[in-house]
Length: 95
Length: 289
Image 1 (cartoon, rainbow over the protein chains, first blue to last red):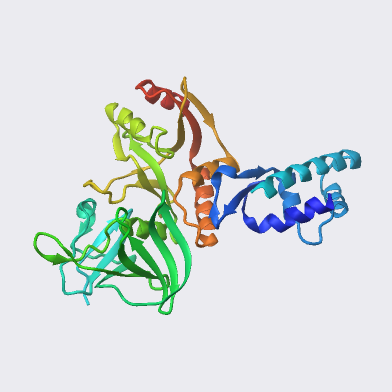
Image 2 (cartoon, each protein chain N blue to C red):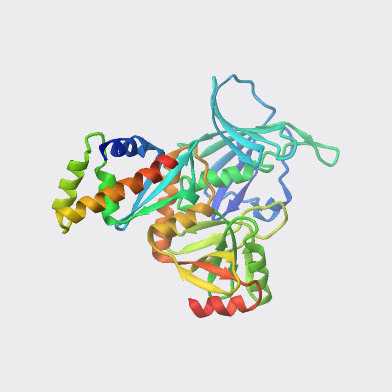
């Protein structure tokens, strides 16, 4: 998971991020041009995780922060967080 | 030097300064947008004869239509310039420099023959749309691929790329008594009173300046039946931005446009619209608003 996280973090500069309400709009940049056909909308939790992602972030760190912020069981959070990171990695690294 | 007149687009006044000894002409689409009076200018346009020499040190951005280069931004030993090209033969048509602090454009072009006279045509396409685009990066404006209609009560825009039925939709509404503001390109502006209006811009054909209050935004697509699906939040912003005109040379412009789009969509409804292109769509839309 930490390897995937590292690759997501490396790709963050390739996106324009726009917070709107509780959602976060990600717009990929290709050759410095926004590609609106490939945008992604993250919900409140996804946006919270995206904003946490920096060079210090590990799976354990994210788990700890999300667990403290949202009402969710630790086991369920681990499963959901893994699925989210895999999906987010597929999206960010295919752009 | 006194201005020779002004051009008014979407309520913004462009003062026109002729720094050459030649007469200035404009594309036919400008004719109803030009005024002899010069109210308090929002931007200044200064026209010069001939090109200047400089050495290009970097090419920063190129705007193309299919494979045709329309304009590019270059760094030179004499600052940053827009180089604007003829849309068909690709020849250099204008050199332009923008001073954002002064709100002033300096535009150089070569003379051409018009009615047996040497003249300058400094805003020949695609220079003018570049002016409107630059304006959107600094003002509460979006430049959008859309048709816009006003039926006497409400203004609606139908946004989409070529082929989704923007012009067809505009004609259907026109047959139902509505006014077409434009069927291809519009400026959407947040007015000082907080309302939103759509404005036409000078096109390649003659038309009067038109504007109307804007209430609804639609994203039409061909469908076997008429359908109406509201879109909200970030998806609506992305959908709207997909049809607004952007150039990627400064990410701040995109962030500015996304902020305007967010404000717009807080105030107005947006929906995806499955369309059967006949007169029934007018009643269908009104019934779903």
